[in-house]
Structures are given as structure tokens and as C-alpha cells.
View 1 (tube, helix red, strand yellow):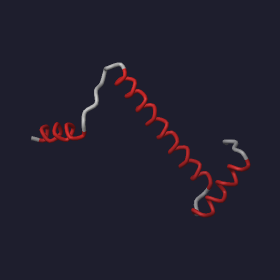
View 2 (view 1 turned 135 degrees about the horizontal axis):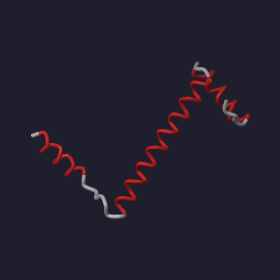
View 3 (view 1 turned 45 degrees about the vertical axis):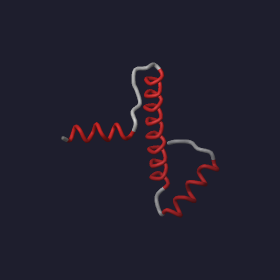
View 4 (view 1 turned 90 degrees about the vertical axis):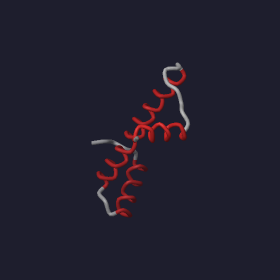
Length: 73
């Protein structure tokens, strides 16, 4: 069980009523979205660090599209 503030609990109860979903499902959805965002942010931070160290480089969208088209033949 996760303990939350009374204010947060009330917010989830109100949302559950509006969305016609159980509170535990809404909490699961919120935590899933948070964890996905967290992992995406960590991946982005690692990519930025590689760019700053010169281990990776950026290419334009046009160059990326051209490269993909060349790979398709």
C-alpha cells in the first residue's frame, strides 16, 4: 500500500468518479506514466552527455531521411 496525502487521495477519488475507473487503476496509470517519463529523461541525459564528450554527433532531419532512403534502396 502506498501512503499519500489526504489532498492527493481526494484528487484521485474525484478523478475516479469522473473517469469511472477504480482509484488503484488511476494510480497505476499515473505511476506508469511517471516511470516512462523518468526513463526517457535518463536516456536523453545520457545522449546529451555523449554529445558533450564528442562520442556522438547530431545530424539534420534531412540528412537522416536521406540516409534512411538510401538504406531502402
